[in-house]
Image (tube, rainbow, N blue to C red; front, side):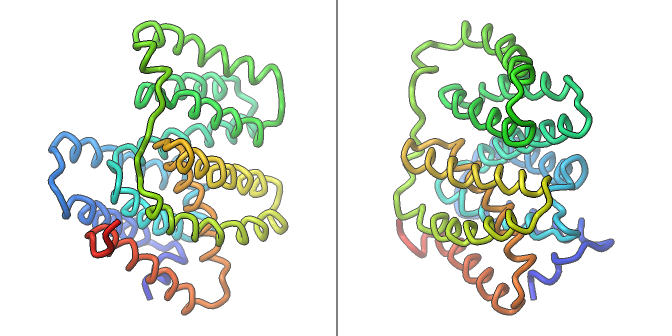
Length: 288
């Protein structure tokens, strides 16, 4: 059974995750021509994402000594690449996860450097798609509010770091570009899978929120904001960023759902069903 290899962490878990990641990237690049620049850049982002997820961000990716979140994220990453470039998903996932880590680090240690680093990172990351800078800023602030609470001093420190970077950037970027909207143009039928998985995530969210400790409750809220808020931004406004964090939130809740689901064979069958749907979608067996 495929999922059984990722339910428990052992000496070979890192190799398995790397192997699945290589397969996922092979699938992404197998169906069409992608420039070498995009290939190299995506490979670099992917390598950085795996390394950070297994080290600095391990606490949220190796959930309850399982690697199921890697599996769910990689499958959804292949589905993302049906319509969009994989580098965009990897970039947004990395930056949001790092901001999430900084917020939790500040909660534990109270270091003001975590606040300043978060504000600076968010401002610099806005260069990726400057027209989505406000979505980026709002999401990171929500993470800080959920994890750290409403502290005026902390918010002002974060805004100071953000403004010191964004002020000169705004001067150099075209005003029209900053005000324009980003439209991903994904067909409505593409959202069918994410909407179905979001319903499953809602049930898992309720269970995890009721049974979890305070830290995991805040994580459940953050991931829930990613799914609900990101899905809304992606669906209604065509935001690349919104769609990316929706997938990021789904990876967290669906991994928890797979971990605690009592019937292993049924969970394996459902996972393979989703995987099959993703692959036939990617290779245009189902025309959108």
